Amino acid sequence: MQVITLARVSTEDQKDKGFSLPHQKSALESYCDHKGFTILRHFEEDHSAKNFNRPEWKKLLAYVKSNKRNIDALLVTRWDRFSRNTELAYRVIREFRDLGIEINAIEQPLDMSVPDAKVLLGIYLTLPEVENDKISIRTTEGMRRAKKEGCYTGKAPIGYLNHRNEEEKSTLIPDPKVAAIIQKVFNEYASGIYSTEEIRKRYYNKGLKVSKNTLLRILKSPVYCGKIAVKQYKKEDAMVVEGLHPAIVDSETFQKVQRLFRRKLVAPVHVMKEIDEILPLRGFLKCPCCSRPLTGSGSRGRNGVYHYYYHCNPPCRMRFKIDEVHKVLSSLLGEFVVQDDFRTIYKRVVNQTFKEREGDRESQLSSMKREIAKLQIRLNSIKEKYIDDLIDQITYNEQKQKTESSIEDLCAEIESIESIERDLETNIVDRVGFLQEVDTLYNEATASIKKKILTSLFPEPLTFKTNFFETPRIDKFVELILLKDREIKYLRVG
Image (cartoon, rainbow, N blue to C red):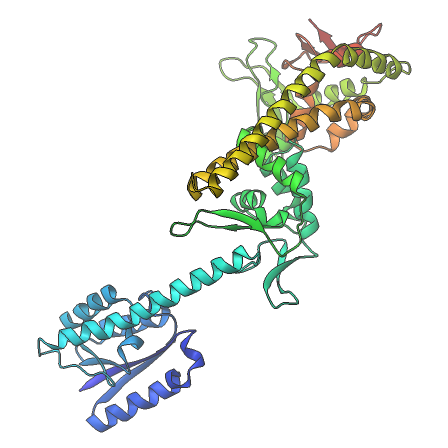
């Protein structure tokens, strides 16, 4: 007979010298020499036998298909060296049999021509799979138990490094190269100003080279606030426990990010194209002839240089060179100068308005605090019902999580209202300072930020009129500063 031989080990088996590759090869060679078989080729692999999607097995299969007329049998030492998946093993045995090739094990030989041999084959193939299932269950339960104790099992996520603590438990430590960037990402997204795509692009070349989906997973993972997520298993519900590792992001910032995701406060991501950086006013300008939004594009001249224009769509032929438009816009933003006495006046107006609405705020705060008190009572009631076996664990976890989430949302709203008065002076300074440097900020910003700056100043699109802009109205705050006893050269309102 002419045969091919296969030796295989898996990660678990490598520790056992009895299953080593040299031992299996020697045993196969001795058996074939004793039987007078010719070994055409020997294959070795270090891979799990749970399936046949194995690199070396694919090479073996390709060899078999090319030399099937010359091969009589495939030999292994034991049946568990061949496969640990009963269903797939039977299928491969049938496929080889159709090619005229017998599969057999030298230490557990079977006479396939005898019907009773199928019973033994079933036992030989089933026992390794049962053993694998037991190992898998023990591994899963062990990892789940470790996670419930706060350990982190598996490869460290971005921003962390794998580590063993003093008790030799598997945990994490912050990666000094990336942890600070992860913290900035959470803080910037929590501000509600930037989209995930804007943040991703900002830090892509600064050490956080991740895809859009990976960044979303980072922002939603509790591991970054020092917690471990334990998945649902059998009848046990999913849970989040305190981890042994230090947090990169504080709990308040992490919860704020999660609320942004839940409430969908951030607009859908608009992926800025390269041409948007050249033509940031596309869609924000109106045609002076037909009042339709102007688009923009570039045309290549005879010398190969591109010239860019803001233009209307056919049949309208209105178009403007981008240099002309951008120059007038820069001049307009340069006119945004805050008068010397405005800060005092503005502060007095804001304080007066704030004081007039103090009663409404106090009423709102009292209402929310009463609601929190009710939810705390409900939370205690849920715990008591669970202790008294009046509700099961799944119901308890669902009601507890829902109630705690409502309390967190209300606490965040209270903090937001209370911070208004606390940060009033800072907000006034920031708002006035923004206008004092708006032309510089605009010129240094990306296309997406430029659009946000313009929409904050001009609620309505601008119409370009060769050497000035027109708009039906502007922001009331800007109007108070700019149009009070002043003539604006590059803007017409109304």
